[in-house]
Amino acid sequence: MDKILDHETNYVDPELYLASKGQRFANYILDRIGLYALIFLLVFLTEDESASDELSDLQTILFLLILGGYWVLTEYFFGKTPGKFLTGTKVVTKNGQSPSFATILGRTLCRFIPFEPFSFFGLKTVGWHDSISNTRVVRDEYGGEDYYV
Image (tube, rainbow, N blue to C red; front, side, top):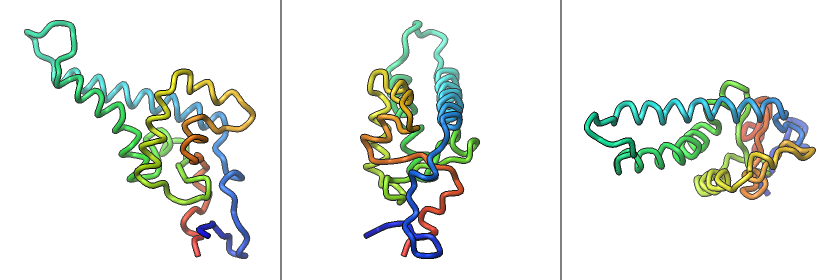
């Protein structure tokens, strides 16, 4: 039973530390700005003066790598995206553990579900990419693996 325990050996539920709607919205906006900045940089650095207005094959491949890699790499290695660094939030599993690579990959793929951003209009700040991947975005104050036994 890999549960998080507090100092009194009581289970600490990550649901009690869910990020607020404001934090989740800020994450969305900040990460979109970061993602668009990377894509702009990609196009700028790989621009060919003689090329047409269409993206080159190299640009298309790099675009897809940036699009998926932005979330996969940052959430897997740091537990958070640049937006989450700024808002003081992080990704954990539903049980409070650090997510595996497969979990983060699934979470990222779920972001591409049409209308997924609208899944936050419910009462809880848990979107489809959270619920399908069994992850949660919690405030940094959640102890997480510091309390594993």
